[in-house]
Image 1 (cartoon, rainbow, N blue to C red):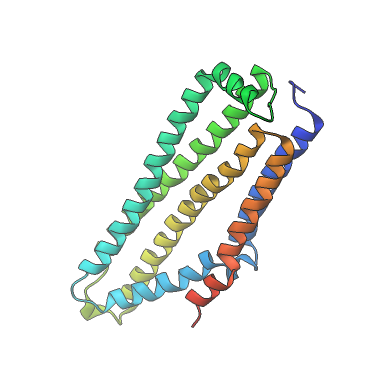
Image 2: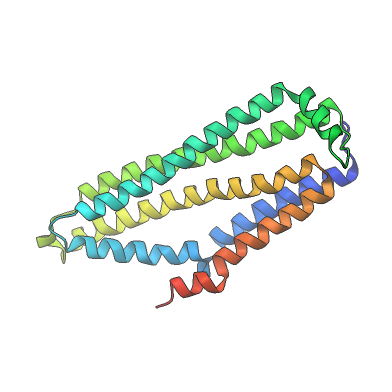
Length: 226
């Protein structure tokens, strides 16, 4: 099929299945609720409960600003990556010559190479949209933070509801940020396909192991233990 072997098709199917499956488990399953990402929502709620009792909320604004800045950095990085991949697409012939000159002599066709590059481009475009939307959601969260009632009304139901809205908005922004960062991680695994289908499978599994360890490993449990 268009120059791809059955092994190539199997490898890219495994890549897509692992990425999508991992995301589904992390966000929608009972197992995902025990992951570091999900545990952090409790601390966002605790943050907002503490924020309600503060007269001056400069610290909360600074924390929100740091979250926005981190998201903006990754959004900018993904745009740079998109530009780099576009340049790679334009110089595909040079890339073929470089690959062929390597010690293990990777042989490919222009159509196959360009298709692989377009796949990498799609991953980084997806990441950019996720980071950009996350940044926007953090802006909304900052507005909701500013609209939170004064500390004197902290015990009133409408004040508690306002704090919960901010926590949910920050969690939603964090979820989209995690999706963008997940795309970056799996893009590293995708690079293995430029060498061989077997390396794509191995790199995908390696990325999966690293990401799972970060979410469920002893370090994650220790940081968020009560």
